[in-house]
Amino acid sequence: MSVRTSPPLAFCFTGLGWLVLASILGLAILIGLVRGTPLPPWVKMLHVHAVLVGGVGQIILGGLLLLIAPPSSGNRTGENSHPIAFWAMNSGVVGMLVGFWLHRYDVVAVTGLVVMAACCSVIYTLWSRARRMWASSMNQAWYYALSLLSLVGGSICGEMLALGVIPESAGYVRLAHIHLVVLGFVVLAIIGMMHHILPTVWNRSFLSPKLAQTAMVMMPLGMAVLIGGFLNSSVPVEMAAGAILFTGGILWAGNLVGTWRSSAHTGSAASDHLLVSTFFLLFTIILGVFIGVNNLSSPPKLPYGTLHLVAYTHMTFIGFIVNAIMGACTYVLPIAIATDRVPNTKKREPYRDQLNMIMNRWSTLQAATLSLGTMGLGLLAALTWNVPLTSLYIQVATWTWFSFQSS
Image 1 (cartoon, rainbow, N blue to C red):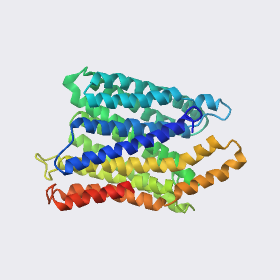
Image 2: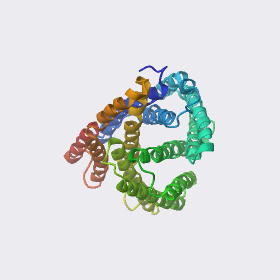
Image 3: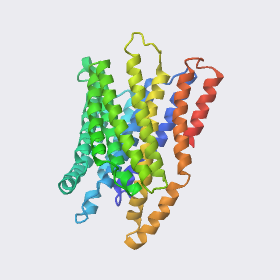
Image 4: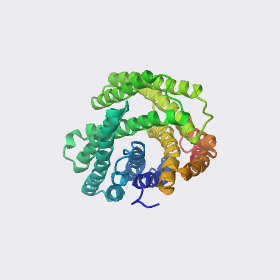
């Protein structure tokens, strides 16, 4: 596949490669934590930024380029041509990782600007397309715009941290950086993709379009309140945000399940992964509310450490984000590959069906092992309330979790 002919596919495949490399690094961090020999903090920075910037962010931007397609009457080749942005983004990610490794935050800042420029180039194209679509149909252009603006805002906060321009407020800027990128960009973009993909996969519109719209308004509202609570260190505000998010999540999940049950769809990798990811979204919202309740007392009634926080965050990262990305990729990639490789429209559909068969092979097992592995990490963290990290139970649980994730 040539980057010049299909940059969106290049974004997606390269992002998946970054996820694989980052997962290996994440395993090394977990093993070091469990064995009582934690790796240096900069290794965690490599892992997090390889996952979010190189992996998740790149896949989402590539997926949005494929989903928010240019008008058929326009110049599709010109509007899809982002080879400079592709190489700038990946070169910038490599530069950022080298900067973290060498503790050269000036290098991180410069290469971060390169990544931001690449993202802004793609965002400009996406926004131009969304504005045209907005005038012709009811769609989620505002939702994508909010997600992409959160990416820009979170990236600016990251630049401020790297440059050290306001050291006295570094803690608040770091919180804004993390949550604008993860909650504002990644989570909202994924929900927007699910809103677009699932009715198409099930060949049925939402059971209640108004309910879907209400849920999609409540989710960004809850996330905005949650970020405000984090920045003000207000647990009651965080819990109020959790209540808004949970209500929106219940409405969203209920509408999805109702639509799925009323459709004639028998199941696919895309549907399985996206439905499982919805469960993990609700589950992590509930866990977040419990954490807020636990923090109302000082010290917390239920003590928790680094491994518990790792388990909680990875419920979101693996259970929700990775499952959703896998679901979106299994839907988008066969369509994009068939369009890229088969110019003849009559021959394209059989080729796409063949690709779908490959993607759907062992789909239930894929979703089950990824989900069980994610839950296994939570079990591993829960064990530490009763047994020490060096116990045999912890070691067995660690490698069991790894076997599920690898499969």
